[in-house]
Image (cartoon, one colour):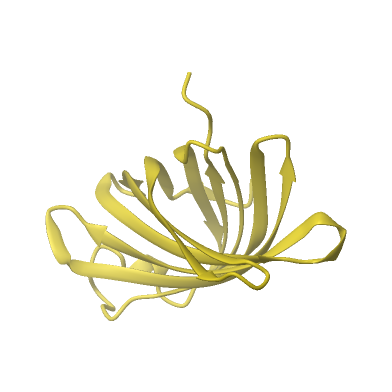
Length: 150
């Protein structure tokens, strides 16, 4: 691991949308509730789209917003890109994210101007859990693990 645990969460896909039938280009929104570094309870709302590429890959771009539960006006945002592959009914995405926050002194200020890499899996049911972000010198790793209902 690259550093300290920064985020753990569980969530579920909240919606799907077809942006273009050519390709096709499909959008997904996921809402996760979790705990950020320091015991900060937060919600991460994620929206990404993806399109198929050659060799069975999918290219994806996404954006997200972390909101502190006790003060939803305190936020951090991120944007990212990745590549995904399917294995059976599970999808695995890997890529990079770029974070920022308008606050330089709030609870989420530690996320400001961070660059990271991510990995996550999703199933056809859209269930999510096991999210963790670790950082070291403004570089962090973001693991989303979206798993089947057990």
